[in-house]
Image 1 (tube, each protein chain N blue to C red):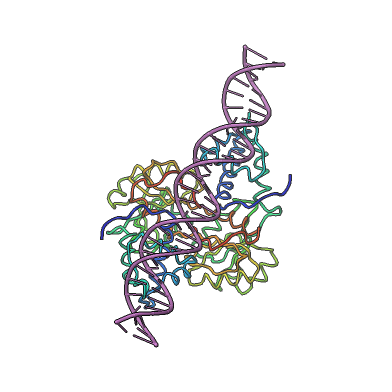
Image 2: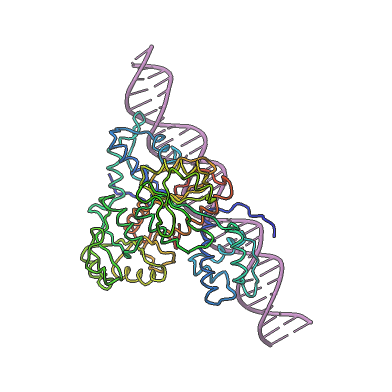
Length: 220
Length: 220
DNA sequence: CGCAAACCGTTACGTCAGTCACAGCAAGTA
DNA sequence: TACTTGCTGTGACTGACGTAACGGTTTGCG
């Protein structure tokens, strides 16, 4: 086993996390082996693409039995997760922020939201969804103490850039951005935008013009 | 003006909605004209791509002054929006559902959530975020009466497929799906998945491996 | 009035992701 | 043991998308 991870395309990584989720469910149901075409059916993809994606994690299947579920899960864990787990910060404890807290609660043990920041002084030092809430002024300090490198941004668009700057100053290397705003960050910081308004407009548009698509979408 | 809309790639449509958002802001600030490279800067894209994307809406710019902001906005409205506006239904009035209601509240006048469904009997017939909440049993009836063709799905994953079936039966043609589950729907129904867990895992992964990307992401 | 400059519209190119197809191999069978 | 079967792993192909380049056009200026 060598750490030859190569560089994985974003789409491939999305599918890998999907496969893992499906595999975990299968494993809990007691499944021992699985074929690429079965996984493909569950993921709405082609068998060849599943096999190709799995090449990246470096786990070899067996021509007769397919992939051994437990071993594959372990390999994917090695490939996808940081060994000690990763702490995540949430900025913005509004409606969306609270929903996200509840949503991620105990879902992925390797990716836990451990701290919340909000500009509202009434929320400072209180527990929100089981997480301590701090003023953004203490961001750098708290983030360093908890070794947080990933943040979820759930603040209104006008405040997004300012918060992003603070996050970067606090040492964050990845941001999941829910605000409909383009964040200017250093090259080394990875930003993933999740624009719900845009997504809804997309649905509204394409739902009007017949089945103008080919396969299942499944884009994050 | 002919209705030659061609078929627009999904990515292009995402960018168009982004452009429009930027243009609206510019218009409110009193800008009259704008160049492709300015829009590109704001959107984090290349000027050539902006021009290429704008070809789809069929609005011609001027080599000397660039694009006339107001006219371009009007053209994009014609291109993107359904004339009378589109009504949207929300299914699932949990944490996420309520956050979405607040989020979309009065944001896009052409795309309004007008009705909510939730399985909780306590919520039936009550107002949630200004929208009447109904039992899913009345879905088909209510949707027809309100002419709703687009729905937002914010229910737990195990219930997603069942709700999707009901939505399809009620005549829905587009679904924005927040549940981490693959929906099986007829070819004619457009599904857009917005998987927050997947997005967070993506951030966690790519934030670990240096700046392994080129430009701004901006993928919905 | 002619020229220069800048930007738009469009075509052509390069790159990347998705699909196809085939060689290799492990198990089961006669 | 020899053969058949079906799946995996991987190279090659195709198509789509983003990027670059180029002609056309409109303005401002000498």
